[in-house]
Image (tube, rainbow, N blue to C red):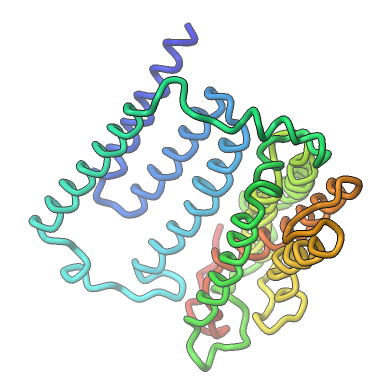
Length: 323
């Protein structure tokens, strides 16, 4: 029975992926993309990779799906957008064939590389797990990300900050200093207002919990921060939590708090452990938890800013009232 369910899940993933590529409507393609991400999250759960499943559901399907949906709205002339030139935006038949052939070649090369892996595949998992007690964390994913690949994790955090700066830099001169994204009217009644008031408190508690347990169980800063960002975006769309100005000191500190804390702990490693991003065994877990807490705030604020987009004038792209 389990094998039948797994085969059905694999078939559904392939079917939704094909449908997403085939469909002509941009909104339908975004819906297919989000569905594809959720199905992939279920597949990762079946493979026992709970951390990857949480990341796929929160970032791959959730945050990325909302960004694509907002982009599709703007491309259609919605809030803050302009109607695109359809003829200029549509690729020719030759371009579509070339893209399809190139994607097929890349897919075949990836499949060949996966099939050519030795059995069993070489792994350092046992060696990494052996040193986990020195860090005081029970989740091997957190141990690897914060210790063995700490520099990579730090650079990923810095990339989010630079991405926010890049998005803000796209604002026109007369909109600088304003809040990011369009202004949504407050929803005092209706399904959106009810969903926001019920879901946001639960989501905030869930995001904090997932970030906190990440040291010893599946979860962590990226998953928890993404959930917090999603709750902020939901309240923003409902008009109940408007985005602050990009000149807000609190917002800027929230975006950079994680990377700054990570970098500070890394530099102090030279003093107390003899190397960059080195943790003294007696304080390894408290330091990792401090970094995770600051990173959760930065991931939440950064992703929310990426979803909202560049600053806009109050009279630019004001959406109509929603039911």
